[in-house]
Image 1 (tube, rainbow, N blue to C red):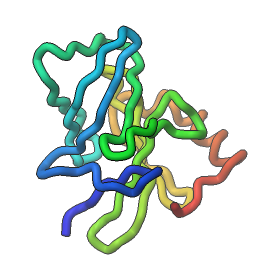
Image 2: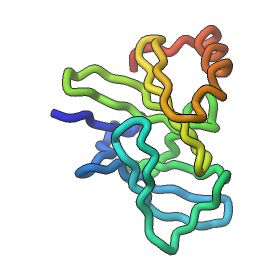
Image 3: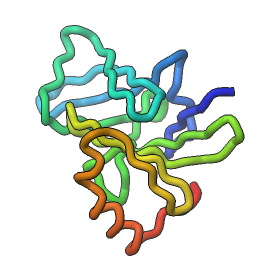
Image 4: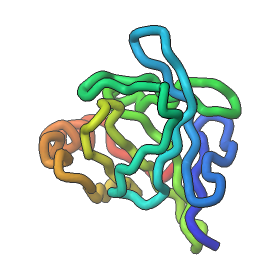
Length: 138
């Protein structure tokens, strides 16, 4: 079994084939589906060619099943999903909502693993969050 990715709200499966599926909306009322790699640290995005995302803009991420926002409650600058690995361990996966920012985190019971060339920008924030509201197993 490979990793499965779940909506933190409805627990619906977000991975189909070799992609994670999200409904996204931008500030200009545009929306569309995007496909992301399930490999943490791979920031390839597949989308419709006419659905343009502007570098640096924050996009809203929604579950394509329950249609609720999947933003991180600790910092809405990030989106949050659940990953279940082949041994049924659950992790929080937190990633930037900013187009072009390569930044994601894998969290389990207070241990935070960072991915992406922009992740170090947020080390202090995550340390502060950890001391004020410790991450816990989901």
